[in-house]
Image (cartoon, rainbow, N blue to C red; front, side, top):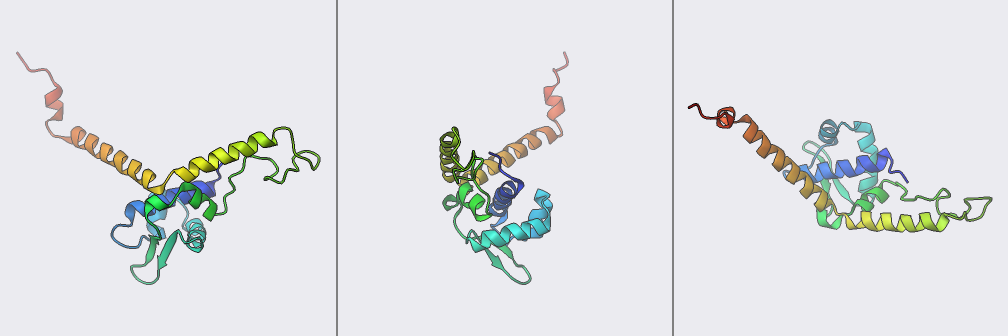
Length: 161
């Protein structure tokens, strides 16, 4: 099973939206610029996310998108399903016609894998992904503060005797 660009970009865009939603609607142009995702592709994805009521749109000047629900109520599975991304490791798409219009000998294995993948993606909440990004950006900021101190290089040098 492979998650396509559609699913990956949708999750990435939703994390970006959650990270930047504090001061009002976020424009797709801003998400596009930060995440290097085509604006037209984001427009398609956000149309689907809006129809599934994961985001709301605000028209006009100062408009953009807001999250429709708290981040702890949105799972990765919700996002992937909203953009019509199949979560399926079977060759037949679950139709049980893998081999000569019959179920292949590994069909049940892949069906069970699908259940585990879906359960995992359902358990991972947008809030967790946002928290991880905030922690990473905090760690980076701390490292930059230490690396950029004017006297940092002198503090590492041994004292002259």
